[in-house]
Image (cartoon, rainbow, N blue to C red; front, top):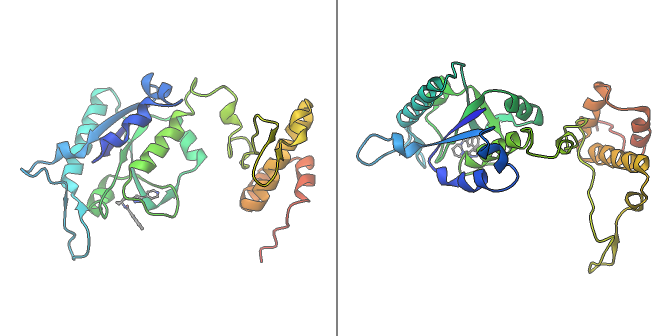
Length: 259
Ligand code: 9WO
């Protein structure tokens, strides 16, 4: 799939695309990322991409016209590459829909998207009204631009590409297996020296009993999910993803009273 990123800061993307495990997905072209520096689409002598807001107030607004030209260039390039489909145009904003693993999976199987990265106080609303088809949020906090959310989305999509991770590992992620949070992980040493006293690895993980280890991990996932994200337990139960053994474990978790 192909992602076209329209941004004032294309240099923010370089290290992500060339380092780490997801590099495979980018360098193989499984996830083809094209950067479109917005400054290149400014037309006046000052290469202006922002201006003061109508109605007054602080800060600057990203101009619609350079964004229109950049989008036009992206669509022409995608058409030239034989992609006739109507492409999803994403804008990142705290007012968007939360990014979920289900959405990431969908994107990872589709033709890609255009990622519009806002800066300053935001983008002229008319550009959003006319062109943006999907507004996405990383959560209820404010950043200084849409580039980090775009990188987060690319990373989430890239790691799902065949051959990027070991076969099993993303089937065991938080949310992927059963919509539960991940269990804790441990490695060497067996006993960690620490200022407040030694910390041992849970004994079951050293037992060699694969069945008991699986059960322990499942129990840890269930209990941490019940504590931190009870709505995910309710969803797993409603979808028939909890066994009788799971329900027995959950009897140890605090009961949700709704009060
Ligand atoms: C900022 C904002 C703040 C409160 C309520 C709504 C809001 N929308 C935006 C917005 O679209 N800002 C643009 C993109 C321009 C300024 C930097 N931008 C941005 C995106 N800041 N924070 C995000 C963001 C995106 C996804 N998830 C969390 C934050």
